[in-house]
Image (tube, rainbow over all chains, first blue to last red; front, top):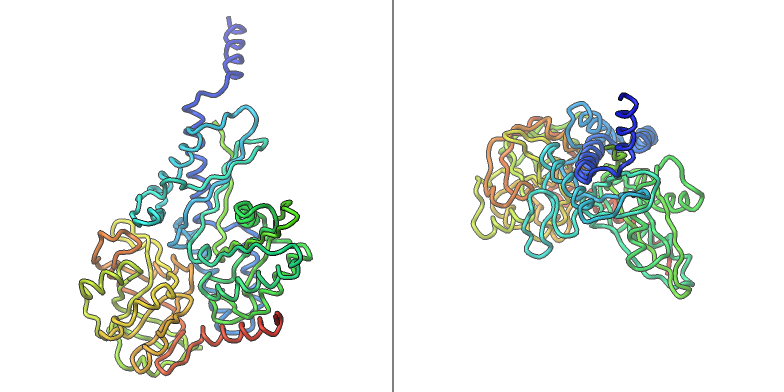
Amino acid sequence: MEIIIEFISSLLMMLPPSGEELLAAVSDATCQALREAEIRLPPDVIAALRHAAENETSDIAREELGRILENISLAGRLGVPICQDTGVPVVYLTIPPGIPLTAGLLEAVADGVRKATHDIPLRPNAVHPLKRQNSGDNTGPGMPAIHIRPGDRLEVTVLPKGAGAENMSRLVMLLPTQKDQITRFVAETMLVAGGKACPPVILGVGIGGTFDGVAALAKEALLEPIDRMDPFEHELCDAVNALGIGPMGLGGKTTALAVKVKTASCHTASLPVAVNVQCWAARRAKREVVW
Amino acid sequence: MIPVHLKTPLSSDVLNLRAGDQVVLSGTIYTARDEAHLRMMEDGIPFDPVGAAVYHCGPIISGSRVLAAGPTTSARLDRLTGFLLDAGVRALIGKGGMGGGVVDQLLGRGVYLALTGGCAVLAASRMTLRGVFHEDLGMAEAIWIIEADRLPLVVGIDSQGGDLFGKVEREAKLQFDSRYTT
């Protein structure tokens, strides 16, 4: 009898998960990832801010970074969002073989966003673009912005994006012969952004792909840890820091904590370049969906 | 540097401040973003503007608590600010600095004070909620009446035309032009 029960239960384990359980787990993982991201910055970002604070020589720049570090530890201690601009939810979903991509799955992510908005709480930021009516729960048509990739595990990665830095992001379709203009365009983006983007920033740079794809690449670059940069990323970062804009635009050595680059193949006649500006509150977190 | 202590309603003492000075500010402040400015231009200012401090901020409010309340980008309000200064407002608090004639509008009248962008919890830990005007504008856009207790600020623009943000921007532009001559 026992053997039979064991056999039946092992058979049940092999059945595909019940839709409802899976969707509830996706919703929970989204909510948990948002909670983590909004309250605690990734260790590589905190380390970069600490390093910047030690490196600054001007009083004002040191004070600004000191306040940023104090704010980060206060948010963690109190369990509240680091910044009142809790952003709009940008979500990266990796889907393993065997999990069908359905409208329900995307709706479960939106449900997690609603739950996070209510529970954490987050500031309701999502509005109709023209009527400016606020949905009250950070969702709406096209929001959350969900990017889907194939993967080994079902994982939700969130990148809540505030408007101060997002508003200063730029895209250009360079000519293939203008490769040497990339550094200039990145530095110019920072020059235009100035203190408005809440520096020290992280710049996500997309190079190649298509008009729409290059912006997505730039944003994906912001998912990369910032504790290492390749020589080209270093060169771009140095060019930005040479501007002396400094923490909060009040002057100093640290304008960018890091620059991260992602590339894709492009048309032989094109050279798309996009710069997605990320404020120092570089919030990102990942949760595996378990059910 | 020992910060200068300011208390609202602000007196003409703020005219002695210089760009780069560190200050701490206590007393009542009023949050206002884009929608609140538009509403006030149409319906009038719902608080006594004389000596008032207006804070460019859309906080997270939970019940009667200010949970997170860092500054928003002030430059969005560049062209919506003159009427406040005309009415007697003496301090604008925000981040990123202001252009569009605000430096001139502040001459002999008031100052722009910079609060560290993103430091929403630090700011909220020094705030008590007192009330609200125009709550129909939504959490981010309503005018929240807040009692501040020693908010740490830097004078970004003073009443003599001194503009720390402008100075940094000009130097950045010179640096940029010297590197990328076309």
